Length: 413
Image (cartoon, rainbow, N blue to C red; front, side, top):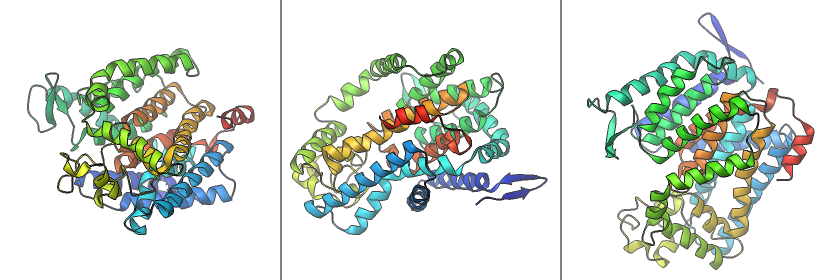
């Protein structure tokens, strides 16, 4: 059920108003830097909303299957907790269930909650702010290289890392995704060139992997989709090779170094999956925020308590990755099913009737998050939820006719 809210002389779709409020609240708590349970509460609401849509058969076929798989993964995790008996409390298990699935619940929920009318009203309300956000990002990013205006952090490659008005670059990227989503609904191919260029300059000068990765893919795909309607497999492979080449240093430093925390999590994630085969160790036991907060029993077994940044006094590296969490906590079967959900979402993009800007944004934004999750817990962070809402706004399938033939093909993936 929806209604319209009159603000001044204009009326806005209620779902647009609520979505803007939610995004604003998430950004506010990110800017504060303190822990808030707002994102967990929102994820719980999103989960109930999605399950309600499932029971009412209002999800498309692809999403119905994905939600059922997600429910199965959660069941595997809970069953793992019962058999492994590693979690300290059922409360931490419950919190971890929400935390490790929040990105998916948010994406599914807002994909249906933000209808085309709501998306249009969001754009109408936020478009001027989004443009100025992009313009000022580009200007201050350049100025900050010569004058200290309090928007830079560390220096990389001789470039001052630009965070804009945010504590961290991934927060800057999350809000930039909202701005681009708001602008991309435009039917003109020329109106958004300057703001896109400006915000990409800011993201590139952030010098961090995820903003750089998004900017490179977004610019490439903007050009690509001007000439082609769909993303070819060969193009995805080409982009993957480029990502690997650009990320050679990070791969060697963080994933190939046997002493690096991320390497250790991947290694012991596999070991945990083998030890507790076939179900894994369960929620709140390995690689998750709750496992870090309660200091999992597994960390003592693996000797993490004697390592820098991974001990009980300093656990700064204990929540620094995402995919190893799935391998360890859900086991090989559960993690494969979990990853399959993300793969299904990626292939569902081809079913959506989008303009070239929206396609470029959707693919670049989504792939950036999947890759970013290798070395970060972004998919279980509140900043990831901001990006999920931005992506979902563009996806808005509620007003689009579904091609049954394509829908059936995607369902086989």
